[in-house]
View 1 (cartoon, rainbow, N blue to C red):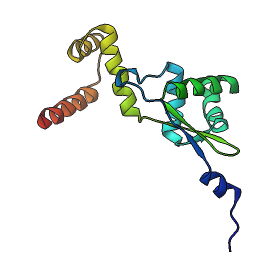
View 2 (view 1 turned 180 degrees about the vertical axis):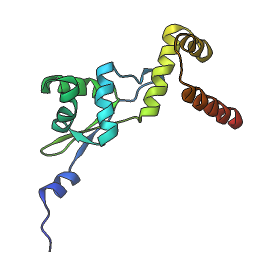
View 3 (view 1 turned 180 degrees about the horizontal axis):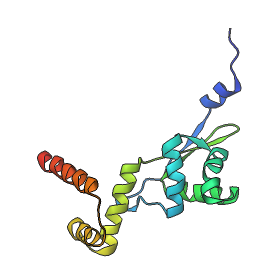
View 4 (view 1 turned 90 degrees about the vertical axis):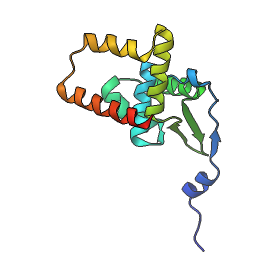
Length: 147
């Protein structure tokens, strides 16, 4: 009979720390939080040392900074923490598109505006490459056909 490895045992006994439920309008992360989320979306579940090694070249963050940011993201319900017997792993609760949507919704509320006005101001101040304009037209056409 095969002997259970400590990895298999710890995976079985892993305790999942539940993320706090947030109202839809409160799902947000700081600029630093987005950097951590980007690594989690790219790599999936990570331990702190993996996050540190991915983030350090771009940010220069110390281990304490990464721990602080992770704890804040867990508290805000954006990152989930799994405590095994010997190791703690983290994963993003929401995918990138969901986070982007909620950030945009928060911007609408903060600026007391709607999509059309925000898009008009952005487009009036930003020269878009022809390829981007073509892609936007295609996306709008798809959206229109769904309605």
